[in-house]
Amino acid sequence: MNFATTAENRGHSAVDAALGFYYQSLYGLLAIVNATEDDATVCLERLDDVEIVLNGRPLLVQLKHSLSMKPAAVSLASVALWKTLRAWIDVLPKVSLDDTRFQLVTVATLPSGSVLAPLLDEKASRANLLTLLEAEAQRVVNEHSLAKKNGKNPLPHIERLAGCSAYLNLSSVIREKLLARVTIHPAANDINKIQRKITTTLTMFPPDQREAISQRLMEWWDLQIVYSFCAKRDRFITKLEVQQRMIEMAGELSRDELLADFQFDAPPDDHSPPSMIATQLELVSCTKSEIRSAQREEWKARSQRHKWMTERADMAGRIHRYDQYLVQEWGDRHEPVAEQHQSAAEDTKRAAGLQIFRWSFSQAHQEIDPFAKNWSASYYVRGTYQVLAVEKTVGWHPDYIALLKGHP
Image (cartoon, rainbow, N blue to C red; front, side):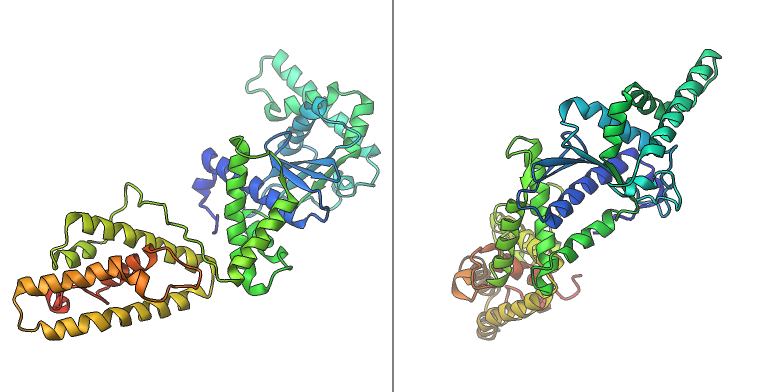
């Protein structure tokens, strides 16, 4: 999936918020996959954007995402920096400062020689930076107060004022302890690159499985995040859970244990089935309920085919070969009927064609080999025959080719 958007869309706050949150989710997944600690856990939107606990010690991560080709570099005057400091200051009463670390992750760059450079190294001295931050915060507060006193409008530094004020309200000891635990990670991967990074990180699996596993893993992860917000599971997701799920996914791929993703789903309310389904079935006097069932199964099969081909590079060829197999099985039944009913009355031809359709819907999935050895869902064979009927590769009426001549 590519999240590249137009400049107009990127300016829309709802789009930015949605991409920003999904970026948090993917960043959390990448963090837990990369973690070397067995007890690693991740939580979103609790004390910070992402909360990563390693060896019992939390790392609070503020994420600043952008799809801009050249986002503004981070500086002492950056709104993002002061909003981040405000967020961390607000959470200080809820954490043990001695045990907690803080990190600002941004897709923006940090210019060479920046005064923020000490934040790149946990062990670098912050003495000079402490002085500069205090001076900048005091300048912002003073200039805002003076402008307000003089009745100027608009007032300066509105977006940074809360962060600067909160920083100045900290004691010098707390400022020093906080900054000693702060790091910055500039030029981070954006939402498009982070997905690829998750895939390339799965080096414990064969190269031909990594893409499929990462896609399934992200789907599972998204659901776990939602469940964590709805109190359907623990707020923290553990590394052991993620490892276990990846092992299960690899096993499913190795055993070719395909999931029936649409077994219990129904077409969306706005779904418009291909008209050829009804056209073909009306030729053999199918009931309205049979037509509706065929349309539903066609949607399931088409959706399943699309999902498989999206997730796995090898599936397109397998799907094509299985289509040929279904056509062969259909032909073994349709061709003799067509030959035997060349001179039959129309009602007799319709009745014979109806029996072929009903075989494809009620019996075929039981009589012919399944798509994979562990596949048992009936909708794939039922629906794929409808997919093929839409393409007019198969049909039900003995004379369906002639009768459908001219139909798009």
